[in-house]
Length: 74
Image (cartoon, rainbow, N blue to C red; front, side, top):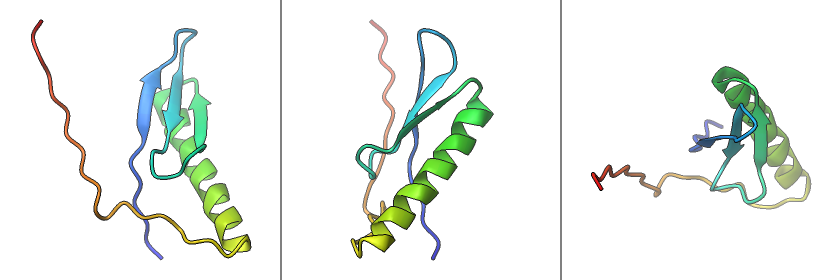
């Protein structure tokens, strides 16, 4: 099964990045670098999906989700 998820990465005040996965509520991790944050997010998603499978729950997909970034000059 090939799944795609959007990651939201936010710079943390103390350094590093916090990562959330909007399609998977509660799936949050962090890393000191961007690369580490993405690697940890990948691991967190895998564990999340394994847990859903173990409980017989449906695995969310983001096939109908779109994302757009808008930049404004204030």
